[in-house]
Length: 503
Ligand SMILES: Nc1ncnc2c1ncn2[C@@H]1O[C@H](COP(=O)(O)OP(=O)(O)O)[C@@H](O)[C@H]1O
Ligand SMILES: [Mg+2]
Image (cartoon, rainbow, N blue to C red; front, top):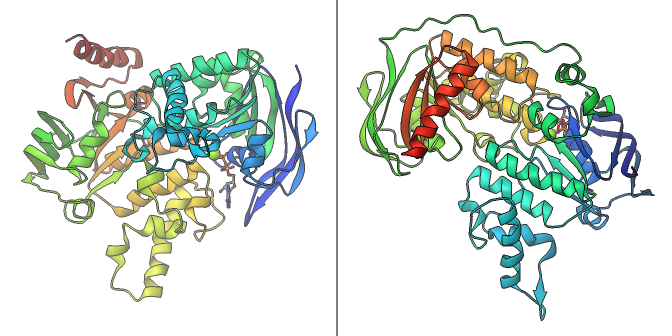
């Protein structure tokens, strides 16, 4: 089949980093081509070169056989390339439909034809199975809904070349299935699709071909997935065999309750939520997206509020008005699911992002001294999590997505909290870092912290949690004592979910 897109010898440097160091990439019509690699390998940089966001320092890009030099993002769209970027690019105060149609707003008599905008947007919302009104403001949507709007915005251009940078990182398995159905249909109609994901099951289910980048170079190039297995792909990605998390055993003190909820109701609509989290325990909150898990965490931390029942921290009734009080008075930390929006201050550097929560402990020093102290406290964590950054002075917004997440996690490790709520801690994180993070979370619990783990990743839940509470419809549906047997545990969890659906 013909190459619709060809990259030869692409190089791109940023201050202190060579993001691409001679990358080749060939994409053909009628294929879904997986672009893989660990966080920081250069995937997003390649995609940004193909969409006119970055200019390569060296190398050649051909689209439909023609050498191209995109002056800007518009030029790439005009050449027939559409993309879903890893970062969010929606305009929050505008409607869903306006965002989807932004590149191509239908006009009538010189004015934007809003009826037509909404009509065309709705077609794509329906194809993606997203049930939100086209008129709704994007800022009122959930993370998953926003992601689907991003995807609709790329699909609506009906480009022959479609680049998708981690499109499934924050959507549900069901939404992923619907998306995959659509992508297969587009491929069969002759579109060429690049698909970036850390979920190898997805890659093997969807893609035809794979290119792996490692440290800005090709670890392999356009290999048919039918000829390669998971172990080989992982080896291309990390340069050696996959390592399994070593978790060992972790006894915990069943009497020391760190957090207790009794019959709690919230402003988000939770009712009758009771749970007990002990020191040294990892309590899982499993549920499908929309089950109300993140909202429960937010209500507890004063983003939203508790409207009924009783909350106890370390045996005493607690009333938590805001996140700062949660952290400083109750020593509760929260690693948000929506790290893009909440967790990090992207224009600040790595050191101040990690240091922000320990700043108070170090306050009172002279400014320059405090800064030195923060750096000393932060450096070992950057090391431990292997954050890929040229220096602690690098702006977090310039790190790769996965490395941004590591900074977010490091921030809370530095804060030395007693209770840590971690919300989807490894979404969008590569295999090796995921293993590192699992070991870290486990170690934190072993050191006596109480951990509330929110995750939709069943293998992660079964690997880490001591007990699993299954949530659905803003209530607790049931509890599963985890024996770490994946088959048995996933069946027990799904049984609670199906029971609730049947009722
Ligand atoms: N705008 C930028 N400024 C500075 N460094 C950057 C910028 N964009 C990416 N990088 C660096 O380039 C490398 C590759 O990043 P990226 O392409 O985002 O990786 P991936 O998408 O594979 O995780 C990383 O080390 C990242 O920190
Ligand atoms: Mg990326």
